[in-house]
Every structure is written in C-alpha cells, then in structure tokens.
Length: 244
Image (cartoon, rainbow, N blue to C red; front, top):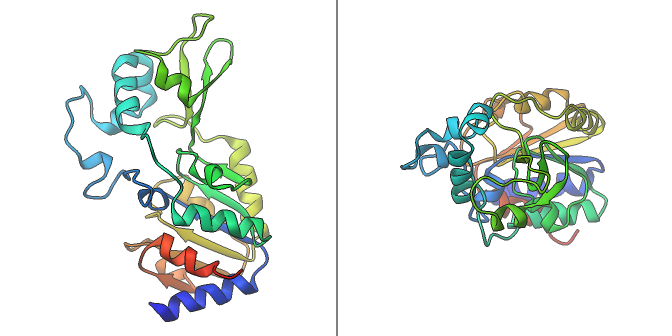
C-alpha cells in the first residue's frame, strides 16, 4: 500500500492538469451515508410509504411532496458534517495549481465548503433550492426551517436543485465536465463504484495518459487504471498532496 501511495504522490507532483471524478465515498468519511453499500440509504429500514429510490424520484416529488420532504429532511439533509480529508486535499491541490476541476456525483456541497472553487455537480446540490413558479432562491437553511412542504412567498412550491430519478442532468454541467476531462493530463477517480449512468460514462472523454482509481471496492474500469488503490480515498489524497 505504501508503494502505491508513493506512486500516487509522484504522479501528482508531475502532472499539471489533474481532474478528480468522485462519488459518495468521498463524503462517507464525513459521516454522510452512501446509497448502495450494505449500510447505505438503500439498504436501511424505513417507515416511509415508498422505497428510497421511489422517494428520490420526480414522480413522488410531484404527487406526494409531504412524504418526499419528510424523507429529504430526515435522510438527505445530514446535519453537523464537515469536509473530509479528501475534500480538503483536493482543495489544496486546486490552490496549488495542480487540480483543474472536481466533477462530483455528490449533492452535499462539501467540496465548496473545503475551499474548492471549480466544482461541477452532476446531480445538483442541497445548498440550492428554487421556487418552481418565480425561481426565487432559497438556501438549505431556509428549507430546514420550514415545516411540511416548503412554499415560496409567491405561493409556488420550492424544489431542491438536485437531479431526481426521471430527470435529466444539467447540460451545461455536462459540457463543462467533458471539456475538463478532455484537457486533463491525469484523471483521479475516487469513492465511486462507477455504476450510475450517465454520470459514469463521462470518464470516457478523458484525454490524458494517466488514470488513477481509488476505491474500497472494485469498479468496471479497474483494468484500465494505470494505478489502482484499494483503500481510503481520504488517506490516499492526503498523502498525495503532502508537502506540495
């Protein structure tokens, strides 16, 4: 393991246009549960009227907003979390001019909280919420303070700016992510099983020569990796950016 961490550090020191593509594993070290692991949101017991997959769909949002927001507030808006070692390491790499972009499947806003600026959120963010009628902005804190189904002062329903099942990804975010991947000389994939499409398919646009995968479980792209690290994303990235 130490040899692989040293190899990662050497690569990070050498490369100049690194892109990071990450998923839930980046934030589990902050205390936010993932979706698909044995302890993830999809495998917990609930007393909701629908499964978690259904509760995170546009259909349920449209037709049972009470149940949607009960689940959303209780399970998605995790309180008291701070950026992990991985979030902080990536912010440091960007500050030092090594990292050009973070492409994330997460919606928790922790990359920005750690200091990263160039973040492409494929699935949106809980930090942003908009009235569906007048487009007035509401913060995460606004949604937490409201009771029941949040409504705007104009009477319209407020929707979190997150991509639900049955919704399309933001095309501007997709385009910017592709541009970053095409221009990168190194891609680090971390904390994701690469099983969620179309997001996972974006890595096929990577135009560089060095692919690194850091994950605790196998991914469909492991055989393509120039360096494969099976372990903690926080430990690996913290080591890689030491003394940079």
